[in-house]
Image (cartoon, rainbow, N blue to C red):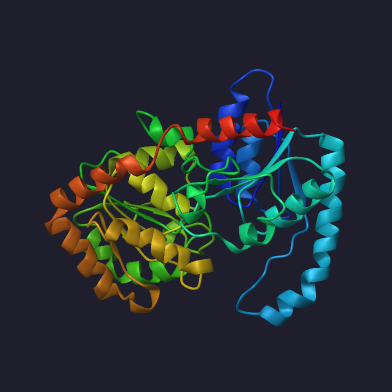
Length: 353
């Protein structure tokens, strides 16, 4: 079977690609946003999966007028997706939300190619809302009012996590020989200047007790600006992320759907600083799903200070055993079978065409 996937949300597309390409006869290609420095393109190239970049239009809720003026450009995006669909001839199109999904879903609808949308968050994102009437079926990560409807077009598959999360390597690709507990700080692939800014004044105190590992993303900060014993990279591979999470004492980061899902799947205590003003306030909801059961602490961005961050670290440290037990209780929320369930839905949809 030939799959055509949307990029933009790397983790679920990557997880599905890993699963289906492991079986003979399946082919995967991905359409992503035009970029000069795409981590996504690099990762799919490692899997020998063709990655096509298209011009895209992102709706900026902070500059609505600017976004509206750029909307005619979506015609170019749809036209390019139509070209690619005609060339690739996929059996199924799967979109994962984000602004790349919109032109791809529209093009697949126009060309009568079945399309499934997958929603990672607890509430529908803007892109998935816009295309919900055009897709053949919807896969949800978590139950909601739509999944209770008695038809096959809305199914709960679970959140798609990379296979490395379930199978960490014995050793990471970097040197880490310390006996100190690991404190992992990440803002996701994009990084977070806000978290790094609050962290920097605390570093001299924290390195006395913890081994700090920092994923910078697009934040400009060199190794020379930090103590030598801190492990810092722009981006860690999926294998390294798996090793880090499985060995972390505590994680500090944003609260994107996949970050929270991976932390829940492993059962590690966390401090979340949700990105504000996300669609339906989704990051705050993601964070609260764990902090409401004392498996994490949520600090809203406008309340984040170095003192507030240090207080949260010390709170979890003092009650680490209980936070860890609560975090382990949440492992059941994430399933290793999520990808297989989505593939089952794909087979149903294709068979009914």
